[in-house]
Image (cartoon, rainbow, N blue to C red; front, side):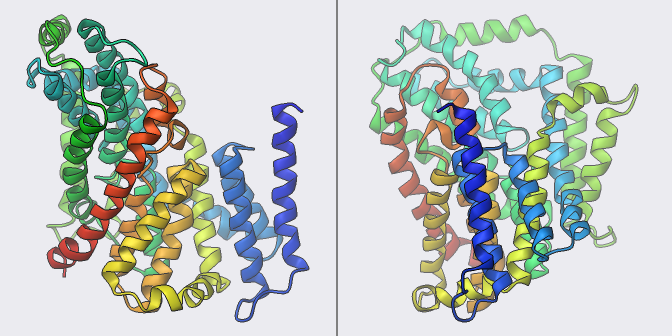
Length: 469
């Protein structure tokens, strides 16, 4: 049976999953609509796991089923595609395109690496730091694509053999890990973050600014990056101590780039303005509500404006992940459906015996662990956040915990994509360099996932409540 035939069968099965809700008697306390909504969520998860259709199409499938079964009117469901959160996702792609077009992305990464010397451990830390920093502001996948040729060049000079070199394994798995870690840091880092912000607004009526998210998420980035560097060096002890000529090669590439160009300066000004505007609503009380999204719309127009912009619209369209925009819309619609049909309160009541007796600190740890396992199954950061953030918020509201903390926990834990190359696009790009096998990533990824869940539990239980009480 061909792959297309299998995908069609998976699609039919997902339809049957939802249709079964018309004949199955719902459990006590769950309305019929709530059961159907849970089956829609299950069908969406099945489509994400099997990759039977593109992730954006799954978002439309959610909206279609909700309208057909009367859970949400079609106009209301479709309106979530135009949710303000997609303005942040959209501008993230355009900012990345501006950075890549100008060459400033490569200059920044090479500059960071050039400061690290020729010791392999220091070069690896430089690569990971550069990847994490760029991933905070642009597509994680694009960031890894930038770093792969730089890392390959370093390994060739060091004599590291593909699939044989421990240093090669550690370096390229480290690049994948640090892309996912860096993406946690800001609302623009990965679509999972604005999804969590939007669901928090829709389900709990709490608005988070750019600084609100970044201040809470940055401790995770700061802690997990050096931890992953140390862990990878323990799991794969480098057989190479120094890369003779490695620093010279990096400096040579910088020299070839010449002085900072006018376009690079313009892009730096664009990024500086974006960050300043996004942070300003935390200090200026007179700014209108929804400033995070207003700035995103303004920057989108700026980037594609004739003469003063950085991308032609035709070029910009090629850089936008349209499938993610549809996925976000479908995910937000699913969150609304789970809430309005009573599915989330029912899940919370179901978990009351286990979660309800837990202290908040332990519940944060459990939520992080469940979400981290989710990314391994769904293989989509956005899909994982879409599924688990509403549940996290629902649990928090039911048991009197902090909904911001739980939305943040599920949102950040959606990026714990350490286990498999297929778990996230950055992993796949790094795997494509040919320096590690799937089993190599699993070996380090299991440890990194356990450590990340533990760190999230500690940060969520002891650091964040004191910083933002």
